[in-house]
Image 1: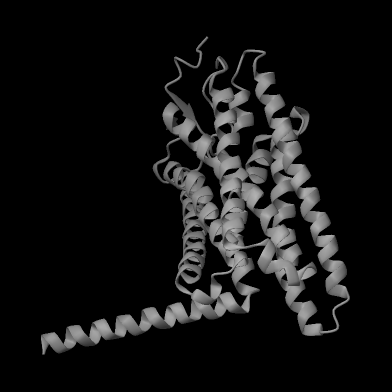
Image 2 (image 1 turned 90 degrees about the horizontal axis):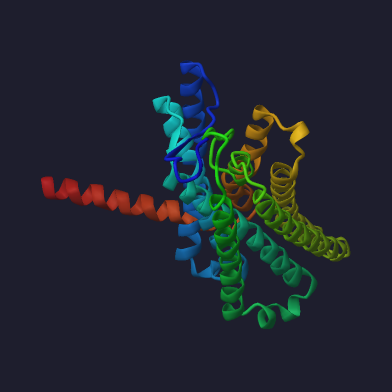
Length: 322
């Protein structure tokens, strides 16, 4: 039986066997990926270039856009390439890198979502203390802690997972290298160590989710007492989408990592993993930009500036030609 030292590549699960369906999946994934690149890229540029958006909320949103770009770029391009070229293989080193990067980014994102909930809690429930509690240095430290916790967790899980002997073949029943499906290839009882680490990490994530929910309970209590209907609408439009995407993120993620084997199936695993690994990075820019007037204004000004520069460049080129 092969072990981890003799496995040179893994075989990822294909979304379809028919060539026409593979090309259809490639087209759909390409559209989702380009939309995620455009949306998150616009947020990055708009926040970085607009001085009015240099506030804690938009600083955390910039970090979220970076994480979303990295997360969707870790999994979807390889799935698109496999669908386009009718190939399922990923190298051993590529699988290790994909698992590490995905774990780093997904865990850092959840930590950052917790920080963003705390930011909204302070802004709405304790507005007079907002500047003193969330200064630039504090925000940088909180963002660094989110990234750092993701790195440490990713290093722990990657080391535990790939230190196990693999003797159940090399077919991964997922469209990317995901920890539970790598563990299924192990033939050693040592995999229980990584399962324990996963349960601990998911428990911490659930604790963060409880903190987020409690934060929003306090936020909604304050919002409902606001005399201004416009103020209530603005607060709800900012907080409800955040809570919705966090709920989708944690529910599908916990289901993917903690579901019992008896209810596991390839199609269900694909759908659940797609919901927590692809949908949030693609949808987050739409949620945070379409419900935020300041960000929409910044993006509009960015487009106007780019259009102005393009027109000037075309005019200069025509003048030189004449």
